[in-house]
Image: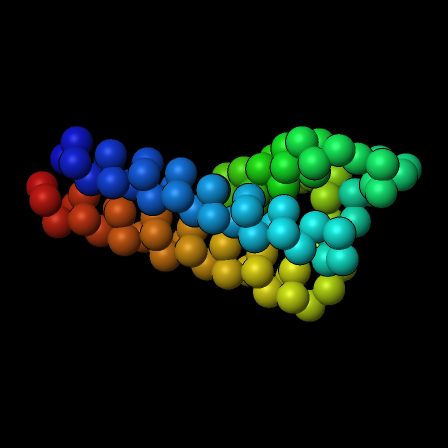
Length: 100
């Protein structure tokens, strides 16, 4: 049971890292920061934190963030992350029930 829990946590950490990196790469053209008035003046660290925060809220199912996807590409990537979380959680739950 502990192995399933550890694998589940590692899966979520990997997804957070991958999607944070993807969102950071496409940040300039695909997202809008609705709180920051001048997103062009944000440092790389600010943008990275924004992307990590966005990825975390998507993965947790909260979805409340100042970063909003503007294009179809960004929206599809967010949907892919949501599907990964849904199916990943179902699979983890299935494995944990199967072991009992």
